[in-house]
Image (tube, rainbow, N blue to C red; front, side, top):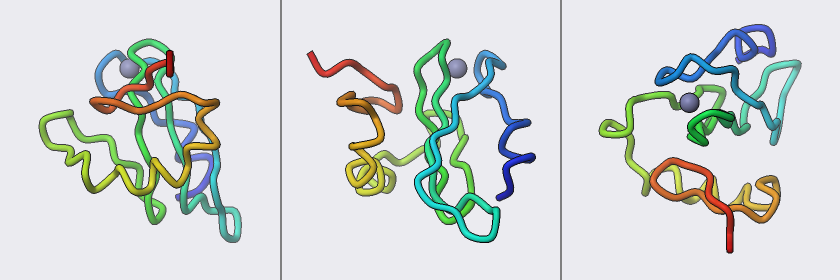
Amino acid sequence: MNHKTIEKLCCPFDKSDLNLTIISEENGNISEGILICETCNRVYPIMRGIPVMSPDEYREFHLEKPSLERWEKHLDGKKVENFRLISNE
Ligand SMILES: [Zn+2]
C-alpha cells in the first residue's frame, strides 16, 4: 500500500488521524507498519501491505501478536493489549 493511500486513512472509531510508523517498505509501498490512533490508542498493524482496521470483535489478536512482538522496538517500550497501546508501567 502506498504512502498517499495510507495517509488518507483515519481511525474507523473516532475518525482521528493515525500516526504511521513504517517498519519496512518496498518500491515506495509500505509492506509492514503500525498505525496508531492518538485518540483511542488503538493499534492497526499493516501486514503484507494491508492495514488491519476491522472492528475489535472481528480481529484476532493471536494473528497480530507475532508481528507486534517483532515490532516491539518501534513501540517506545509500550505494549499492545486488547488492540490498544498501553504504557508499560
Ligand atoms: Zn481511534
